[in-house]
Length: 222
Image 1 (cartoon, rainbow, N blue to C red):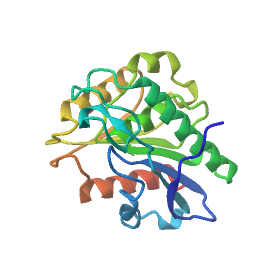
Image 2: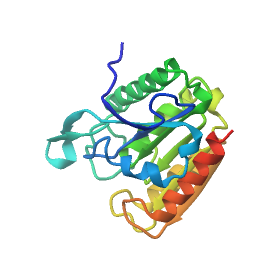
Image 3: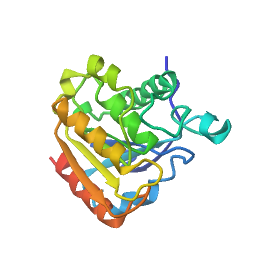
Image 4: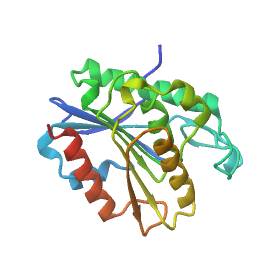
């Protein structure tokens, strides 16, 4: 049995009609995106936001320094495969959180998986494999991991899941081209991706927040 990760929760914490499980980036924690929630304009939709804390592990590119991370990153070149054992572990932990939302009364088709940077890679990896239809996937300033595994393991239930993908054109951490490559790969596999590019670095901006809010209202407003 997978141990549930500790989480920050906000929004409709007790009477949720929908859920967003949102994963932070490398070295951050579950509080990172909490301040964005009031800016999204989804308060009337009864959305519970779940922001898990990644476990603290040694990260190779940071000289083995222990920090919150969804998996180890061994090289700066993100085209090389990362720590796939860590990727699979984190995917299982995210799936456990989705299952908890279902146990708390939110059906899978009312759950969005979201993530920023390394968290976005896990959100995509877990969501595209999830065996029941989700409301959508949100991939912010991120890239695809384990593409070979995805071809074999992707779920038919989520073959047409809505994907919101966004990237900064001046991102120095995850190059814009990596985001584009992930988008193009998803499209080649038949996914419909709503792509947004913003004149920013490895961050979020107000325009992006507005677009995320509109997308969430479209996905969860019914």
